[in-house]
Amino acid sequence: QGNFLRFPELLDFPVSGFGIDLTETTTLSSEINLQGKILSAGIVNAWSSIPENIEYLVHRVREAVKVCQPADVYVTTNSQLYQTISYQGAIQKLKDCAELARRLS
Image 1 (cartoon, rainbow, N blue to C red):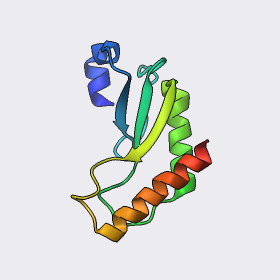
Image 2: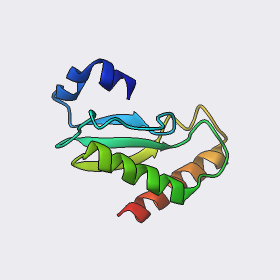
Image 3: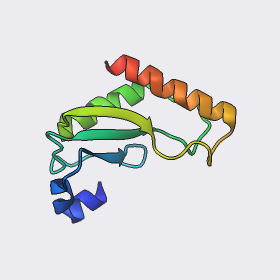
Image 4: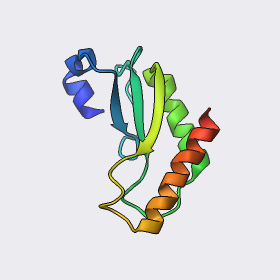
């Protein structure tokens, strides 16, 4: 969120969407208006092997959508899985992404 507030012209770039690390962003500013663009919500924490609280993640993504008003939202991890946790942990994180997407649809 910091770059969007410091450099608001980023929001005018001719791209289809933006990624925001929601694991590190506690609140979103209403100045981040993504109308017509995709929000790639990095909400599943790839840096931790602790199981995710899916209900909390659903709440956080819905909150981000309400504030940013994107055209669409994709849920993803906040970083590459292969560099951060074990293979089994990575599989669980992908399952968490899938479950989160199901609950949001």
